[in-house]
Length: 503
Image (cartoon, rainbow, N blue to C red; front, side, top):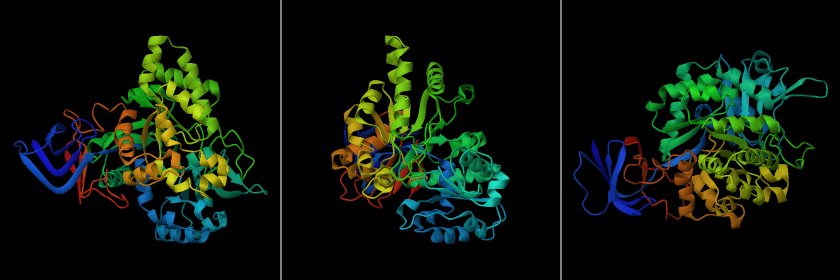
């Protein structure tokens, strides 16, 4: 089946840079051109529209996004009382375990969280309310008891030794894994489909799925792999595990993904070199140096792309230093292959300029989340609350990363921030530090070509060239020149030659 999509403009992000139509031969781009289009089995007329390559979101949690969509207004709460009112509406007439996601107390005038008594008063079914970053959960007494986390590391207790309802670290992972076991296979499929459908409605044609067996079990990934060919979006899975044989048995080319070396700034578990401004803590380190080096070394020698999650400056230092240990064991030829592997670091938020230089020398790929900066990076925001103005100001230095030659792609970390590339592009353009801002076209390239390169998909995705996947989105205004991208959505999304969304 040959299809011509005819628009006013086609941006290829390659050569030729623009055209007026794109010819698709089944799953692939055959060519882009101007003037009268060639004959085809089908012609799709898009008068006045602009076509651009499909966006690639480099950091997605599909099931978690589906769960978030069940109660999307949690993020509108501005107090503990308002949060409990919203949760109360969600749990009405529910007779099974309830898990919801998305509150963010960093924007509240009074940042006190609901107490265990508040949570118990809402419902007697097991209840968990997950913070927006996923690294902290509030749970009622029944959930704490039935999930078996009362003896786990990360369970917060008061001065009398009683649980407060707040869990982080291993207790948080175990609690969420317990809730996942109460989802039927069909329910998981529906959650993943809902998230994938949201992605294509925003012009995203490919996602890098960050599977989290520690929090959802391996079954969540197995369900995804079984039906991913039927999803409207193309999926590249990354598994947060150190079990190399398991990943190889699954036939996957990468391991680690969002495997946490540390936690998050919001939960005060990101590993930082100096204590947080509002606590005496420096966060959490999840690996000792030798264990991390063994994982990196074995994963690299197994031919896998290896990735980890690192946010704090101490965590990023450990990751870069450990990769340097592995790199120095290799000969010249081995080092060339090492750099070509583009081992990944997710987030990389508190990287100093010297760390960027060292990471670039190793050829590391960096998956950034631009909307983190627009959400929490401004004056008085979450980062400044936890780290102080000086440290917060230097975070997420996107332009410096690019200027130093790092491989940079962009993701949303949905459901933490929305799977909306227009908000990511805007965040790259309007960084809180003007010296770190990127142009519109450069931002678009990071969200397409850059993210495709992180998964070694540059021969398939990111640009509209002959032989590449027919992945693109059409808009009624030109995203590369529109004055504002706020609320801009595609009128058509095509993923691997399939029309998967139409407004």
